[in-house]
Amino acid sequence: NALSLRRKLIDNGVAMLSDSVGLGKTVTAAAIIDQYIKEEKDNITLILPASLQNQWIEELESEPWNLRMGRDFNIFTQENINKLEEATEKSLTKKGYESGVDLFIIDEAHNLRNTNSKRYDAVLEYLQANPASEVLLLTATPINNSLMDFSSQIQLGSKGELSSYKVKYKSSPKARSE
Image 1 (tube, rainbow, N blue to C red):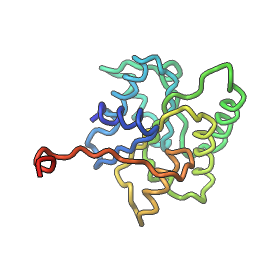
Image 2: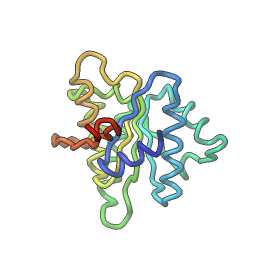
Image 3: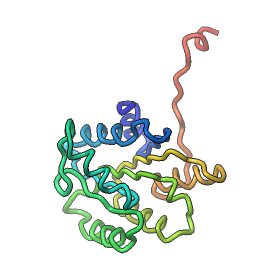
Image 4: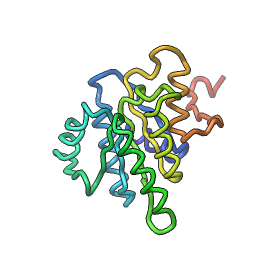
């Protein structure tokens, strides 16, 4: 699962892991973070609801990951728009002489489906201030009300781009022989 997501991040710059609650989205994301760090892409930022901050810290700082907040990853909460705006400004002023964020992980991405909210705008601007970053969206409910929910999340992960992506599908051996 993590390897497949990693390939999608490399190919598209964005990927979404949508799975039911309790099926390991956090652990899968931790494996991806670990892989990025091994590749020396170690500027990792998580954007998540404040209610999940301690859960993420406990997961990432425990075995087998043994990561440390502030050293291996940073966390911003979706609710703290001021901190997101400060991070955006910091990213914009560092351009040219310091690398930006390598990977954003947005947990509970469905909370950011409203393209008219200040929270959506703050996250989008932070992503856009780091154009070379890749974005992993995590959600148990990619579609709450309509397909536009899904579209809004993908557009956010794509840093506002409206272009479409060519999706590679593996065909089954039976389909190839017909």
